Length: 311
Image (cartoon, rainbow, N blue to C red; front, side, top):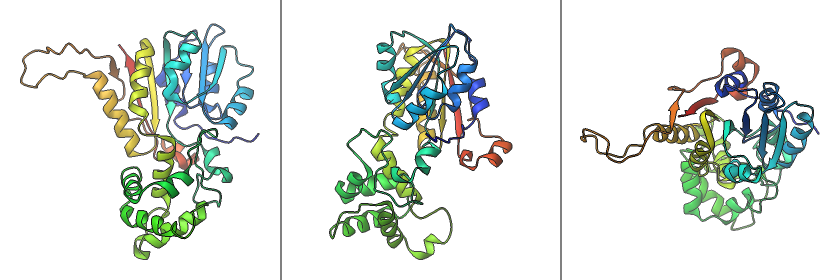
């Protein structure tokens, strides 16, 4: 099975994880095992690698690509929000590091029938987990106009969100919107021609918003960070790659809260709430792709890496 995906910020992630040869490391977004292969190359036979993904294609490819590594390998079909449950099922108490890449894989974008891309005509799908019952079709055809407006505005940061939501609701009165191209046509009608001359593809922001809603991408980030930090051994590291400002803001704020959890009023001379820092933020500013990586992989241009270390 072909599964092409260029791992973003690969060297920076490996350095950020500070891998111990006999440690236990988790990749919460296994994909095609790009990051995972390099993590495993740093592990000895005493090490343990755990890969989590909800995409059936990714799991099949990763099992094949990691079959000859020295370390113990456990590959689990799940979502990274279930990391604590996955570790419990494997009898793992603490881990030495975890990587989460929040981007949609190139494979998912390029596989036309998955319905992620506005550049291919396909059924409206966008499910990262093919076993999920809830798809982009449901979002587009069942959400109220108010709900559509909210997600397109918040998740897509689309200036024309109100019009896009109105046009979607108007269009589906005649028949359901079933394909990506049908949705693209509606979006193009909603966004004035003058506004479509500059900037990205007019459907980009709306498609992003719908994908985020289908896969609950934003709402699971902060709870996952808290759960993973709970499972990190002292000195263990959590590395997270984000691809847009909404994700990055959530990660930054979650890390900050874990580093400085004090809820006392600023005028208090000493802390009385009793909340102690759980992590040290390693990246005061996010790590960005190098010029070389940007030239080699244009999809890395919006990537940011943030890292924390468990105290």
